[in-house]
Image (tube, rainbow, N blue to C red; front, top):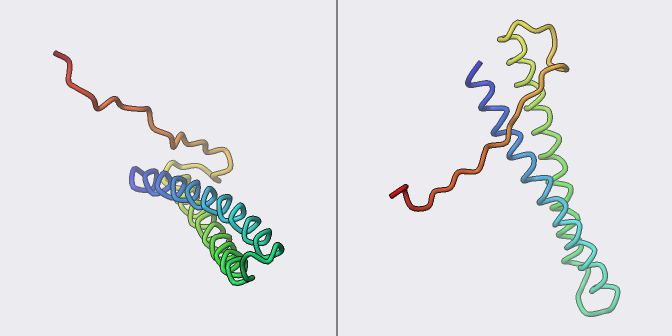
Length: 102
C-alpha cells in the first residue's frame, strides 16, 4: 500500500507540473500567433507550440490514466470496493532547512 501511495503522489506532482507546462505553452502559442500575424515572425513557432501542446495533452491523459490505475490498486490493497471515495493528501508541509537551532 505504501508503494502505491507514493506512486500516486509522484504521478500527481508530475501531472500538476505538466498542466502548468501546458498553460505556459498556451501563452507562448498566443504570443507566437500574434507575432506571426504582425509579420514579425513566421508561423513555424506557432506550429511548434501547437505540436508541443498536443504532446503535453497526450502526456496528461496518460498520467491521469496511470493515477487512476494506481488509485484502484491502492483501494484494493486497503480493502475498498472502488477508489472513488479515496481521498489522498499529496502535498507536503514546508520544511525550513535553515540553520539548526543554536
